[in-house]
Image 1: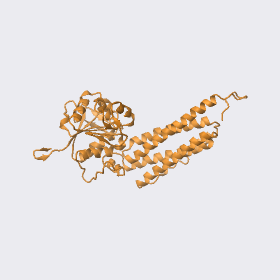
Image 2: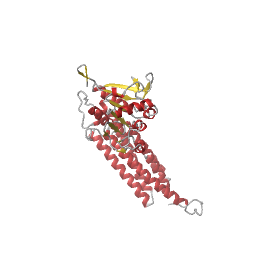
Image 3: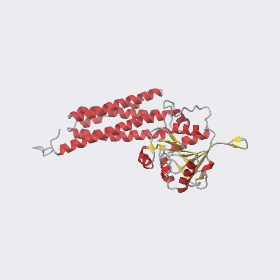
Image 4: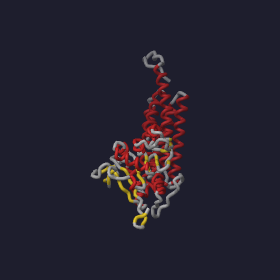
Length: 366
């Protein structure tokens, strides 16, 4: 398009509400502006200071979806966080997105952003993705859910989480035929590209933040490896011992994955990742334990903590490769949690059915 004989700037609307996921707003916003696009922030009120979920973003809207027209834009971006849940209650915002989809304008949604599309009945028969917690919502809306960093169907672009942001943003730039000065944009299908560099350039995770997160994960998995080595040594039941040893072996695999990732980044595990003294209290505690049920209960607690820790690490980074490692670890630990929980419940039931000890009256257990 041209105006007065000159190429018109691409105009992109980014929707906003309170507690938007900071990086999911900032990275597209920064990249598009660097590419020379005119970026317009649209909220529900222009006199409101919108703050990010992580406390890193504070910005006022340039306008609202009430008076804006979708046809005035080349693309509409819907970031995630808690913001989409509020956006979907604003019929003007939903109608704005409906108009964009109907007029074949690019619509890009990440994380919880597709909730707005669900509200507008815009996803039936579409391939799309989104944050894991809204997968069932998307499927109920008629989506063929694809668990990939980027899904493009017609004029719809979707991604899953902050870790996909460099790929998501690159896709938006490329469909708008935009380039960033002094920056090479990889092919969005190239999983081996150094995506973390683009994330950092556009305001996402820095290399030091990525390395810190990996070292935290290494520290946690080293501790867990030693803990499950100790648990398996304490167990008397062969089945319990086998399960605990299996979890231990996965911990070794996770550590290797993480150390390999550090190596690719040109880094080594830091001293703070060495937790050789962190399990001393654990060994002392185990000296007083005399039943497999108690060992399993303690092991279950370790895994429940691990699931939460890895989940939090995964959602704070904008490096697709590292986040994919954390995601696989999250899946593994959740599976191991179920293994141990099932065995714990079975042994707990068995112990409650044992005859009482002839002297103490307590149940006789292994």
